[in-house]
Length: 310
Image 1 (cartoon, rainbow, N blue to C red):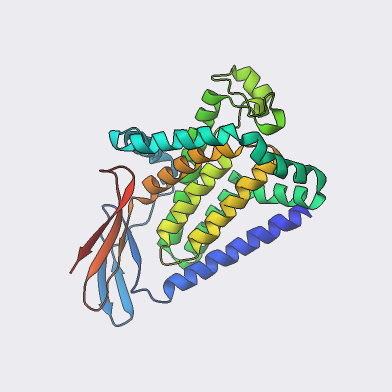
Image 2: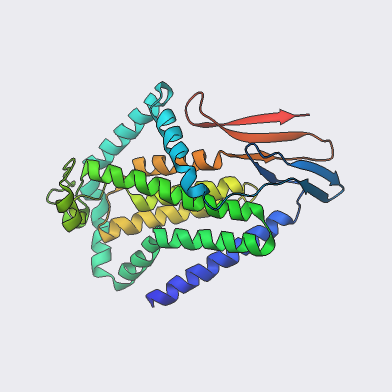
């Protein structure tokens, strides 16, 4: 049953990617991306769009661009403009910690008593893991290579980059915080044991790996990358965030995480997603030869900037 469900998820996603690619090509005059420092010349004749000198992404981008990703995240996350956001995340996390036991108990109880919820929680949480994200990257990359779609190939590489960036960051934070997961908690709200011994951590990960959530962090980063590469597909965000919500609930039900593990995870994933997709420039061109672009804006904290040319 488990393998069949996973096969269905994989086939469904590959089909979805194919439909996304088709819908993005229905009106090629609407949306087009270019990589930073790689100009694209557009020549439009009615519904025909000509692209010249379009450079593709490099296969090693997920590795070679990681240092800049970490630098950009650190530079902007710890700027004076981010103090308010850090404070809000701290307060929200603290409030959730104070009610963690009460909020997870119904989900844990249903997981233990209902075979259906037990099975579905295991399969849904799998959607937030690295295996599924790599399948997503493979699907985008395969579609891109077969159809000659550079945008899909770039999306695949950025998914891998997002997975690596968030994965490394979260693993470091887990080893700093050392928080108990619900299934191994010795206290109602899960004790923090900062900087646990590495041997202890390896031998009993559930005692230390709860905070923050890697599944949620990487899922948000991957969703942000996909949504920013395909902004004309309006359903990506609502479907994606709904799926991430279900992933979060399934992880709580399984006893892997507390709800208070999620605010920081969401913030890390979103910021890495924006840093990575921020290398893209979106251009729209119509009959009036006007154009606009969307770009990340870090001058006043993490945000989005708009530019219009006419």
